[in-house]
Image 1 (cartoon, rainbow, N blue to C red):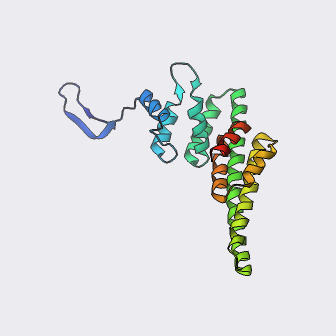
Image 2: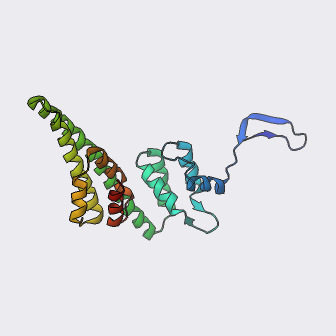
Image 3: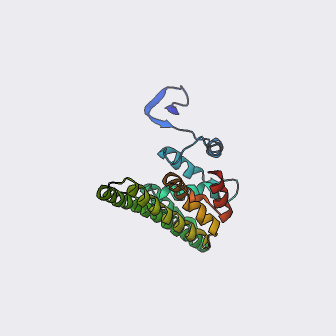
Length: 202
């Protein structure tokens, strides 16, 4: 951060205007080392947007950063608008269609997660009512767990179509807490093998 000084006599011209220097290579390095948190730091996500273009290679962008910003944009309206405008100005037809496909996929997953939350809330409310009527707290827990199981299975089926029976059975044995974690992490799986390794790690 630098104030503005005169060139000849080094006198302070203004203490209102300041220059901020951003070293993009260091910024990208901090992101790769997970020292930046664009999910919770608004400044970090906008700085990453500035650094997403690889200036060493014309028109090339850092896909890993760009994809993360796409997901964050689902929760940040201003970032979403910025990415949309950038896309319309700079992408070719092929890139535009690829972006549209990724965007639809992200929106579908966001909607599924929101639906999972709603189902869980509805199931908990139903479980509470059952528990009151029957005098058993187990109704609340079973209702929520069943809803989470159905949501987790639906998310995985949307991504990978056929789910092996042993995977379904493993998910069916999970408690509500682990089912919630599975739903959250479902967007990171790229293959059914990733799912199997995740289940084995629990």
